[in-house]
Length: 258
Ligand SMILES: Nc1ncnc2c1ncn2[C@@H]1O[C@H](COP(=O)(O)OP(=O)(O)OP(=O)(O)O)[C@@H](O)[C@H]1O
Image (cartoon, rainbow, N blue to C red; front, side, top):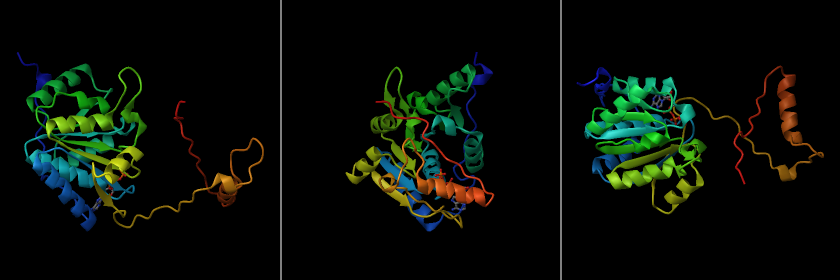
């Protein structure tokens, strides 16, 4: 007897809602739609500053995949698998996507595994291991924040989900979209070589302004012995504190092992 947990996922409506895209977004979405329509393999690097509307654009490619009756997979770095993204997908397609990550229960896993194989799950949002699900007819893989180091599995079987996505898509006749504001060098090089198509969203949507950025060249700084904060940075922080404001310093948590 079929257990209730093995019921199919709700059907997503590719035309449920959507924002009016900007001309840059429209151009990028049209190129991605053509790729999906081809039902053939292809990889596109979708580059755009934070807030340039990359997600809206790749959701259009997901919509086209659904129209084609094929399945789509959106990979997110583990940490980004938040309710906010799932809520956004649900608002776009009128029903929730299937979720795959380490936090779901064993029975959900079983349900998803079976439904993916039977075609009862048309959109999966997941962490890197979702790449190994037995999709019946996979038409699109989106790797969001493709530069993120959490796509690298470093214990047991070593692999990078970004590369596996490209490999799987080439086997399945599917499209890959690598989305990032700061693509990794490997993807950039593949685009330069013409192996990947490249689409760029040059501007933020709406009135949002980019912050002022300044790179400090440490070779030009007069660093005291044992000091690792440059005088320029120290002065910038002090200036903010004097004005009663706050400052936040980020450190890279994951140092590359040598
Ligand atoms: N054409 C549009 N009209 C109105 N709002 C839009 C449009 N495109 C995107 N937005 C909104 O702008 C914000 C940023 O868009 P989106 O998340 O797609 O950008 P992004 O490039 O994917 O950002 P990130 O790099 O942070 O992932 C979102 O709140 C989104 O709903």
